[in-house]
Image (cartoon, rainbow, N blue to C red; front, top):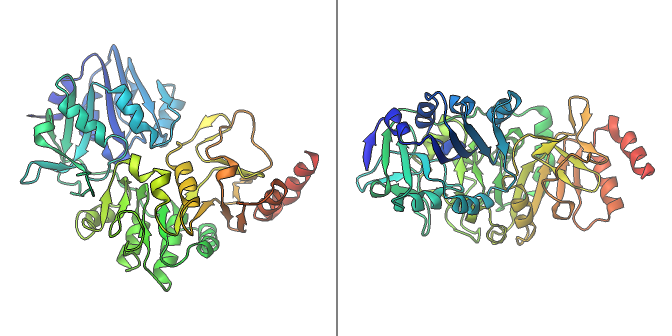
Length: 426
């Protein structure tokens, strides 16, 4: 292992090379900014997802970004004409893709080495944890680990240590970088209304999966303020809402059926308060696992009363869900949407909720049909319940005609007549 500055480590990336970094909070920001100090590359291919900063690297000639999940940065780079491409795959599948690609350079962030030389992978396990280990053991590849004291020391569970040992690291970069934070705005009245409808499908003692946003936070606060408890957590993302449930004493993880005694996730994003909690009180309560396990529908289904709570951009009248791509444009990514919708459906007592506001501006988000350039994220036969501020449509086991009626009933009242007219013309 060599201990270098970010600038010195960046020099070790060749003019023609392949580099992979984790999704979001696993990205080594100092190293990526140092790479961006170079004016050009002959051919540098970078594999990433959900960039957390506008890294100049991706504006340099010769650099191509392949992203598995678009956020605001990717959308901005794409719209500005830079060489950015979306790779369609669910989050779980990227572990296989990473192994096949075997990029020569892999770089990640981590907490500083402990007394045993272990660097915790902190806020991200995702699709790269196992490939980081393989990279570190391969003398023909280069493993760069950027460590910062601002990243919490977190743990894995079972045979997953959720860390990398200094003996496996080629280049260790010391940094003072802070993890990217997401604010936790107060839920809107529409989000609170959606949460109230969703709560009817969440029994006491359920195992929960939630995403980022106002609706999951509103649901978490309603559960935290209400009676009962005994909840478990099995979630791709661990955010502030799930921390709120823990602090309220609502989570014990005792009767989930999969890794009882621990909340499990594959990455965390949220406020600084969340990160401090994960590195302190939450360290023994929340464990990080690779996405191949967390998002495996068969393992999700092993949890009792599994309730998945996900968002969407739009839903059509047969129940097809678009969550990442609309009107020919990539908006986000596939992530674990279908995995959790499917896994919850086969859980004992499980339910799957797709939550969205009925409108975006003046446009309905319950639509008669999608245009030919739209890609479906989750097919109709997987979908259980769709929730808007106007109610909940239970779709599982319903005919196509019954689905249409149920979905029209939860659309914005101003759009229901047009939706019925479109249905009658078909």
